[in-house]
Amino acid sequence: MIQAFGMQSRVIVSSFNYTQLTQTKTLDATIPVQLFATITNAMIDQISAIGGEWVGSGGTITPSLLNYAHTKNVLFNAWTINSNSQMIELINMGIDGITTNYPQTLYLLSDTTAPSDVIINSATPSGATDIILNWQPATDPESGITNYLVYRNINPNPIDLYATVGDTTDFIDHTSVENRTYYYRIKAVNGATLKV
Image (cartoon, rainbow, N blue to C red):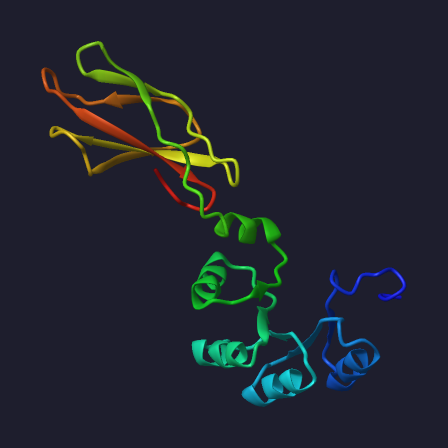
C-alpha cells in the first residue's frame, strides 16, 4: 500500500517487532523504519545492520546512547514526552524526534525566534505618584506574545524586574513617591519564553 500510493518518503514504519521491520526493509529498502523499545546499543546495531533509520524509546535516554545512535547514522525518537522540562532536556541533548500528546507545547519550545522589540509610546505622570506606561504591542508570528516584563530603576537602562503583566500594552506604576525620576524598560515574552 505504501508503494501503491508512492508514500515511501512520507511514512515511517514503526514497530516493537524487529522481525517485522526486517521484512519491511526486505520488501522495500527505501521505506524508513523505526524500532520501538527501551533502546540499547545492541538494538541500535540491529537497526543499523538492516539499513534502518530510527529507534524510538520510552526509557531513559542518555547523551552517550544518543551519540552512539548518531555514530551509526540512526535517528533517535523519544516517547511519550509531555512535560516542558523533559522536552527541553532532550532538545538540548540533540534528540531527533519527540512523540508527545501535547504537540503545541513542543511547537512553542521549538520556537527560536525572539519577539519584536517593545517600543514605549509614553510614560505619563498621573496625579502625584502614578506613572501610566503605554507601549506598542510586540509580535512573534511563531508562538505569539504571552506577557510583558516591566523593568524600573532610578538609573538609566534598568535591569531590575519590577512587574510582570499579561498580554496588554498598558501599565500603571503606583510609585507612592513624589518628585523622583524613574527609567523603564519593557520586554516581551513569547510562548517559548524567549524575550526581547
